[in-house]
Image 1 (spheres, helix red, strand yellow):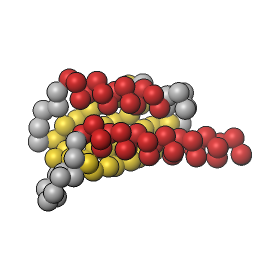
Image 2 (cartoon, helix red, strand yellow):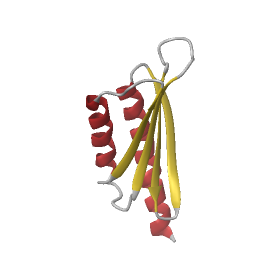
Image 3 (tube, rainbow, N blue to C red):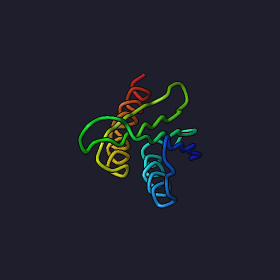
Amino acid sequence: MKVQMQSVHFDADQKLLDFIQKRLDKLETFYDRVTEGEVIMRLNNKDGINNKTVEIKLHVPGTTLFSQEDAGTFEAAADAAAENLKRQITKYKEKLVSH
């Protein structure tokens, strides 16, 4: 899957980009018609430790799935967002099959 990644107000290192790419590639095992993805990583101004936000958009035929998660690390936020998208993909597929 082709994934566009942006980091806002910081430079993401290659290790982080590879980690997110790997997590999103795993989603293709649940639904192979994902056309592309967009990932935006940003440091937000929230107080406390959960100041890293990851937004993921996945484009599938007919709709766009979206998840946004905050966590203490970008890896944890990406994991949580990918889990959320896994549930959304599963629901979306079930909806398609039931029609």
